[in-house]
Length: 260
Image 1 (cartoon, rainbow, N blue to C red):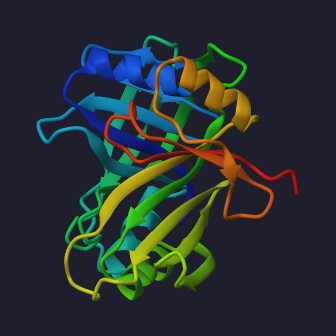
Image 2: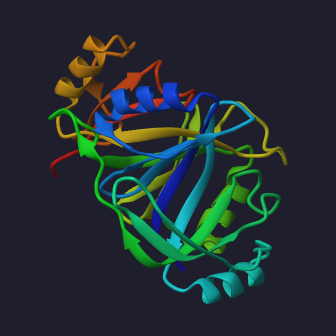
Image 3: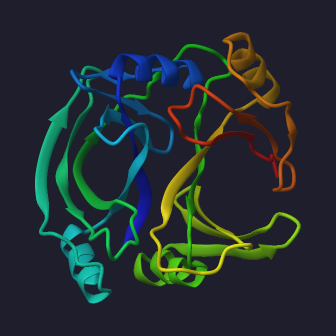
């Protein structure tokens, strides 16, 4: 049913400030609208839009190859989809997109806003990079869950994502589940010190890819951001660092992927 993660939405309270922050972080220039902005990257779009609920991640949009079948499958799997909505849009970058989307019931997705979209037209120029150490794409999006078995059933069985890892690691204090979606990962994280509950899950953090972690860390440090030292990542062969501010309230990790 799902073929890729198409878009991640971030809510902002000041669009000009948010555009400046994300342009600095990503080292890319967005397509700017009146109250929104979009960064088209190699494997997804990041959309900024005004929100009355403060800054932070607001929703995921997954691409599907057949919206009618996606609606039927979602209904059979108790995701309570809304009827498909047609759309056609363009922006200042020369992008043009058209198709239909459905919203899934947030009660059924345990508090995470999820859309499924089928594009009949998708023309979207890559956001122009302003540095050789620019972000190239998304590595993974992190969802914090209050109930890991419930989350495993949602993202694996009901949404049909490919689970690649389910690891409980006491030294990290976490149970982590990795679901492959296109060439990136949807990561589900559960804090082992918590009792499983029916509380809502949280769309929580992002990890961005770069070609060279040292160069990206130096660029952001020189731009005045609070960044950690570059360190070895948990995945063998990766190098990572944390960005502690200037991320619109989104916990952010920068990853230099393994060459293996």
